[in-house]
Image (cartoon, rainbow, N blue to C red; front, side, top):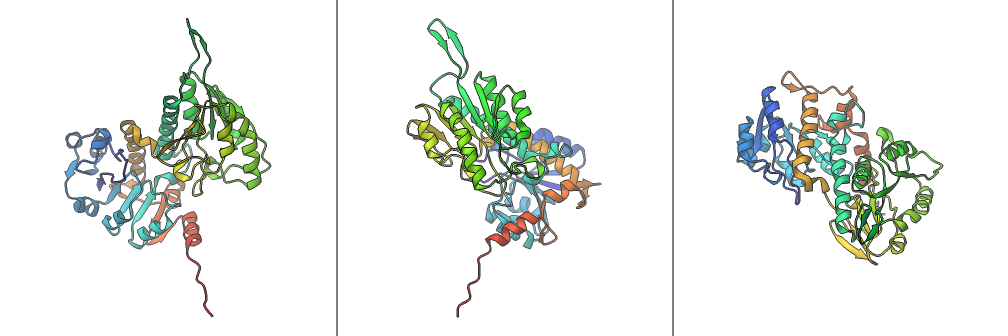
Length: 385
């Protein structure tokens, strides 16, 4: 089986789908690996490293995209890249299928079998393939470092000849993978940490990391399939905002991570809340690309609103390209091997992992949520009398 690793063309994307160490293991297992020239340069993996690992370096974009059995990527496809794929080929990547259902239909029309790594179920059996979680952990870590760098004070408590400096207060909203990593990182830097999540079940995890859990009683189900937070009612959102307002006001750094797959990020930190924060405080909004949890967030920008620095980072995992690529390569190679048997793709759609991650196959969109999203975005047809 011929596997292709492409050079990412999304602006700011520095990761690569496979690193040389993982390539070497795949080659030993009988896979033929072709790598587009320069694919790993931004992550500090050079063509010579891939050749030494047993890969073939391909200089022609057309030969790589159109000549392999399975193409591996990191960033979701640009529309023009769909046309570069070989008709009937297989793609494994992040795809943002719920955010771009029309592109998924285009893939189906071209008979592409497409797997979205963000749709790998969050189960113990699929943990080694869960690229969404591995990259979210990097985002949570980097969010704290960005917050600490922008905060005009120390994170830890310091006792000095000039007096005692109290520790910074960090409030993390959302205790998923990114949020838990943010909590752990802030605690390692010496901050006092509070955390909030609409899912009561995460309380124990938050407390195990040394943070205080902020509890809010919501009279509705808050957990979707796979353990993710689900979109709640407007009344619940209002209750949540009221409950966290006091914690936002006293925090030196607020890190927001709340996202709902396929939906705009919930607005949790209002402009009024930001105005109550101390001058010099910082908000790092990890949901910036989905519209932001903070009303003042501007994706990809750092702004100051009434003395508060609001950071809306985009694609934070890419900023740690070496280790992000290493973790992603482990996830995607494990998933690739899971889908193959005796050197060929073996797709068992009775298997929960295969069925959940496969978005298109056999000319159809297989994922029900993507189909619903596509139909919801179809323009209505008006009848003219």
